[in-house]
Length: 135
Image (tube, rainbow, N blue to C red; front, side):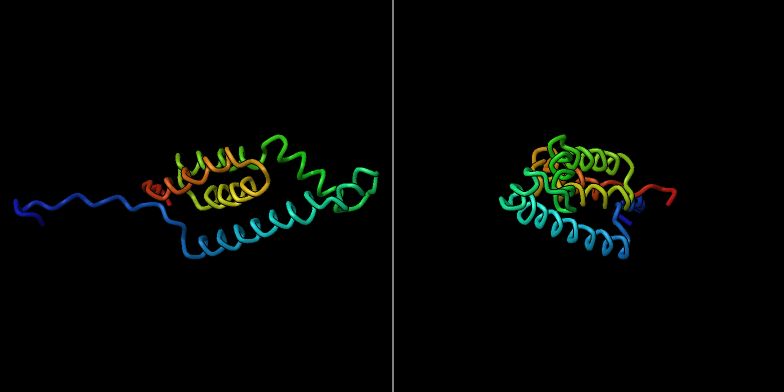
């Protein structure tokens, strides 16, 4: 109650992932970050693997390297992160938050820095949004 005798309207509950969702998102983000760092520094930028793949070697690492190069050349990591962040900002849920965080980290490490960097503050801003009423 305030001094006039009326009660304040209740503040809307802000979106926060559940404890389980936060742990799962954190683990997936850590795995994505570690995998992206390994992919960038041990596979893509490794000159010995690059020369072998360009010479025509057909291995899993060469296929993985080519797939990663094709994905980041088209900006897939950054754009997926941005789309997930915009959906998360519009209608907050744990799935979009996790997808946005994972792809933003992949994009930051794998050369999609501009779009992925835009997705991260949008994800942070989505934590200030009211939670959906029909949870």
